[in-house]
Length: 232
Image (tube, rainbow, N blue to C red; front, top):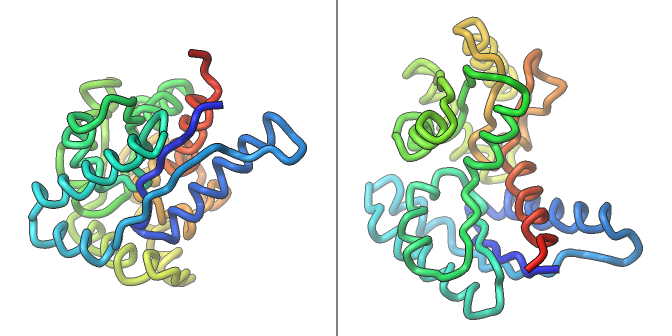
């Protein structure tokens, strides 16, 4: 079994889910007392969040790249970035290491395409919904048509993520708000919904929605475990 390297802390609420998932998935495969071989380097989200909202992405990219280098030196066989938004810095990470970087969009898009879905709704931070680093990979790499909420709804989604979910607050009113937004996306042609922020899965569950839901945290963790069991 290979060693999974994880960059966590953004937020630790979702990093906890990654750690739980990779260990559960390994135990499902091997049984007994088995667990994942993993290393997690957790950054201070307060520092990263400031860089995000001040648009200091080059500095944020260096933080991510430095974390990846530490994981590589610590014996990781791959790097998993446990957040969607910071994949804006994927290029900096990939350039800094010699081990594979497992991009969160790829297993998500593969799962969508496997179901024959062509038009997908995307929820996430404003950075993820509005900028091209995420939507572009879905469109250019996998031929998907991506629909996003209205500007006002994007503000609501972003606010709930940063004022509630990353702090571990699960608010029933916010769940209703998200479901209303999801239903609007479905009315606009979305055949499925990407939970494109690793905390959204704490609020929205697949059974809450009438179309397929793609939880990036689960799909990314599964891809990491698949990698860990690859030969060679």
